[in-house]
Structure formats: C-alpha cells, structure tokens
Image (cartoon, rainbow over all chains, first blue to last red; front, side, top):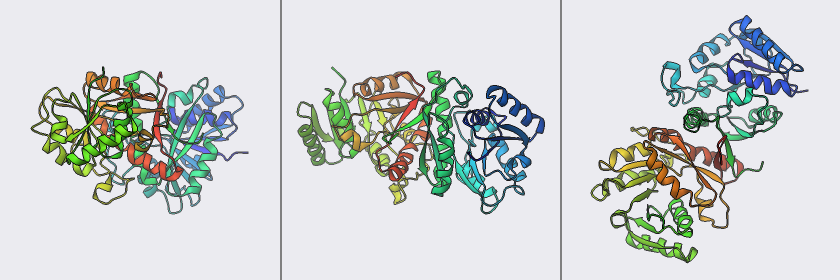
Length: 223
Length: 223
C-alpha cells in the first residue's frame, strides 16, 4: 500500500488536482488547510469526484503530524507564514515537497513575472525554514492544475524534480509514477529550483498566447 | 528561395549546427567570425558535410552587412564586444536572433548556473546594444548543438522564441520550420528570455544526470 500523502493547500487548484489523481490510484490523502471547515469541504469534494478514494480534511498542524510526505502547495505570499506555523510540527525524516511559485502576482504583479527570493528560490526558502533533518524537494511547477483536476484528461508530461538527495527524489518519483502519464525527471540539486520555478510563468505566457494548458516534456530521455 | 541567414559565431557548435541544418534545406548561409580564416574554415567544413549547401565565411562586419537575419551565437563573454563591433554595421530592419546564454561558465563558474544580467537577459542586453530600428528576438536556447550537428539524428523538439513583435517571431518561425523536426513556440515578449535563457543550464544539469542530450517539447499545443 502506498504511503499516505499530506497536501497542505489542497483547497487550491494544484493541490486539489494532485489529491484527486493520487486518491484515484489508492494513495491515502490528508488535505490540510488553515481552516478546518475548508479542509473538510475539499475532502468532501474529492470524495464526490473519486468515490473509492481515501480523503480526510484537517487543519494544517494536525494534517502534517506524522505525515511521511508533505506537499506544500500554497500561494507564495502564504509560504513563509505556513512554514512558520509548522515549525513545531514538522520533525526529522519528513519530506516536504515544495510546489511554491514566486509569481509576481503575489504582490499584484503579472503572473508572467517572478519575484526574486533572497535564498534563490521558494524551495530554498522552504529548506531554510523547516526544522533540522526535514528535507525539501521541489516539484510540480510545470503541471497544469486544470489538467490534473480534469480526470477525463489523459496526462502525458513530465514532473521536474530538484533536490539535494537522490533518495528523496526517488521517494517522490515512486509516488508520482503511480499517476498514469506523469514521468519524473531529476533536474539536479535544490538550487536548480530557481530555474524550474520560473517555468510556471513561462507556461502561463505560452498559455495566454496559444490558448492552451501547456506542460513540458523533456526530449532525449528513455520513457 | 529562402532568405539568406548570417550566423555570427558559427565556428561554435550551436551556430555550426544551425548552419548545417539550414544549409541542407537550401538556406544560403554566411558564417561570420572575428577571424576571416576561421570563418572560411568553418564554411569549408560545412560544405564538406552538406555538399549541395551554399556556405561562405566572412569576417563579422562583412558577414552582417545587408544580411536580413543575423543569428548571434557567441559565448556570453563575447556578446557585448561583438555587438559593440557591429554597431556601425547593423542597420534598421535587420533582425538579430540572439542565442546567447549567460552561463556562469563565462567567469569560470558552473555551466548549471547563470549570471545575472542587468537588463534582465542576454537578449535584452542585445536589444539595448543594437542601433535603433534593429529588432531582437531570442531563440535556440534549448536545442542541443550536438544533435543539430549530428545530421543522422532526427530532431523532434521545440524552439522557444521570445520577442516583442509578432511579425519578427513569425519571420524566424518560417525559417526554423524549414528544418524538419523543429517547431517554434512563441513564449511571449523579449523579457521572457530571462526565463528561457535559464533553460540551457537546466538541460545541462539534466544531461549530466541522465547522460543524454535533452531538449524540450511543450505539451498541449497543436503540432
């Protein structure tokens, strides 16, 4: 049986889409939100869409407790506050999968531009903020939330993953590979997240021009 | 008959690969170099590989003169000097296709890292340096030089193009579409080059890990 996954911010589109896709292939999902009511509402919506799925909604701190893998899928403007609030909850050995994108939209700028993050990337900011021994990998920046949520849509794209430890990326890859049509590509150390996080605004720019939900596939790899 | 293309820096791998691929489909190619001998040597090598191709080698200033389209494919450390030297040669109406990547390798850093460019990207630096009326688009940052040069290899990847004027991108697209297996994707205004230029180090990082020559394909578009 697959590991349980906690998704902080699964009330948002990307996190909710991941919850649906994983729930459908038998991964038990804990949906975290600042607000218990919203977490439960999202879990209810997920159960309605994937009736055989295992979804529960909890407040963030309760959701994260004992979760082996925590996906952080919150807007950039909430990332720092969310991690501060989880500082006394996260413990050594937990893996945080950061999906945060430092879009300029966080400060009312364009969604095709990003903010500079002092640490280099939102993922590196996350790594700095989590307690000692909690590891961070970066992922899911090029996967369309709308396509994840549309369960009729057959996915066929890559998930670009950055992280400093090969075993952490491998652990995430095993989970991602449960979702048909997604392939994990190891992009290098966590610092490479400063490039991959920019791909969300690039795809938003492409979406605007081509009226689509673009994703990325790396060519030249074995499938 | 297709427009002539001038490639400044076609003595390097990317420029040389483009020269071969275009030469093979009948595009007349002028190879520019600081050194006349090196330009002629590259033109000779190209002619040997593509015997029906139309290649000549000239010094940069002569090569650029009257060229409707100039591809700038030089190392970042030479970009500024090259454009300074071309300041009195480039004239209104010419289209400069900038393929420069601000790799940290330019200052002996890692090829998986980039330098910050004050203007935002090498392409924007180019736009600032060319005379009034010369337009700049950014392209070719994700196409492997080695695969371009290997004429046995069947290409199947995207060329991500940034530029402020749709007609400039269209003009380049028509030329790129002559090369079988390459598809142009309009990524937005020239400022988006600051994202696309980062994709070269990302692909270098992927290449190291996966021992391949990676490229990028955008999913969700009509082919």
